[in-house]
Amino acid sequence: MGAPAHADLNDIYRIYHTKPALTAFEICQGGGCVQSDILQLTEAEWDNVVQIFSPLPANADAEREAISKAIGVLEDMVGTKIGTTADRAGTFNNSDYLHQQDCNDEAINSTTYMRLMQQAGLIRFHEILDTRTRKFFFTGWPHSTAAIREQATKAEYAVDSWFYDNGFPATVLPMATWKEGYIPTDSPILERK
Image (cartoon, rainbow, N blue to C red; front, side, top):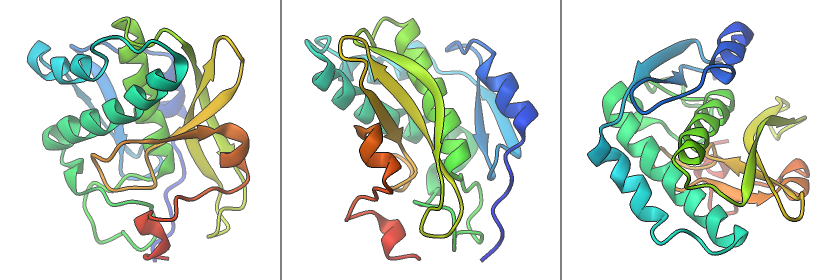
């Protein structure tokens, strides 16, 4: 097992403070954002995301479900452009796979995707937060996720796309549950430990 890459904090800071647009947004890969790609989506491609939110969700629960599905669709579209379609769940034991993404890459990318959704008026019941990190994952390494806060209740949710292979919906769950070390029982990472 190769050692995980350390996050490039300068790139992460820059990406977080750059407003993404469909005509130019940045995606991380390689572990710790050691490689980033600037790409764009056409209106026709973006329409695949809009359709997930059509009609617009009537409440926060439905909006979280739409966010989850939309992240999977965006991962699939982006993956065909930058080579991350083969990204496997997790980080460890995947060093032989090109374009692998670690949890830092996934958290940054999911945050970027949600910012694009918010700018398009698709996210109305949540605020997008900076990434969150929990300590002492089963490998002993910290683990990061994208995060949102429901506006009405102020409840925070993890939006974690790292648990499954590229293109699967993100796992959205209460932040407190995620912080306790939650791993979906059907996640491929449990088989690849």
